[in-house]
Length: 161
Image (cartoon, rainbow, N blue to C red; front, side):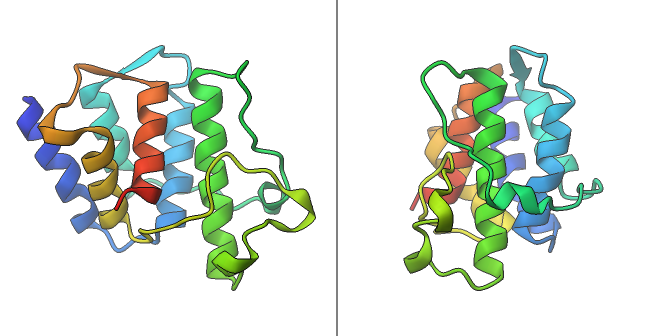
């Protein structure tokens, strides 16, 4: 699969689903966990994970995620940071869907999450489009993505304008 085909595929995946973004990210979290021992994800596996998250069963939301400490420290790396970011995003989306506004995003009880509180995109299509634009600009897709690069993709999906 060429870089151009991979980039095009990333932009079309979201158009194939009406799955809520939070549910999509829960499925992606489970799928990513199965690959956590890989130091890098070949580009085709990266795309496959994003594609499969549109149809694979998502694990149930765990209310403990709302109050968990998902802060990231300098001693953390790779999959561990990726997991904290995606679980933070899942908890944020659940809070937002249940009425916690951005103004209340100080996160009651001192909850620490890995990401900022700004959410510009709340659909799978917009999330994937902005993740691609922010983390993989100009159709440049590496042969393999590291977990930090995948983490950047998640953050761009949330915040990139």
